[in-house]
Amino acid sequence: MLDSSFFRESQSPSSRRQGGSAATERPRTQASGILQMWRELEDEHVRARERLRHQRSIDSNTIVYLYCFGEQ
Image 1 (tube, rainbow, N blue to C red):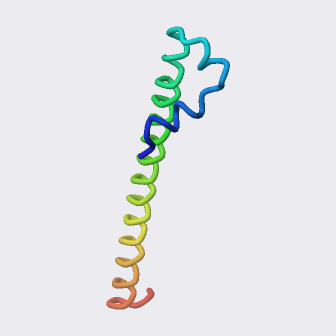
Image 2: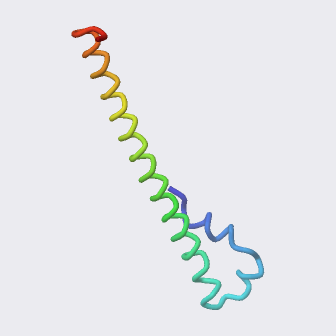
Image 3: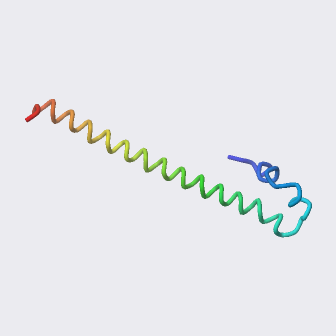
C-alpha cells in the first residue's frame, strides 16, 4: 500500500504553497480516485480468474467425456 508521502510528493509545488482548502483536498481526491481504480482492477482480476476457472472446468469435463465415451 502507498503511504501518504506519495500523495504529498505528487502534488505540485505551487499548490503546496497555496495552503488553502483546495490544496488539502486535491491529494485526498487523487487518493480516492486511485483507490477506486485499484478496486476496479481487483474486481476485474477476480472476474477474469472466475472465467478462467470456469473455462478450465468445461475443458476438463470435455476431456473426461471424450475419454469415457469417445468421439461420436
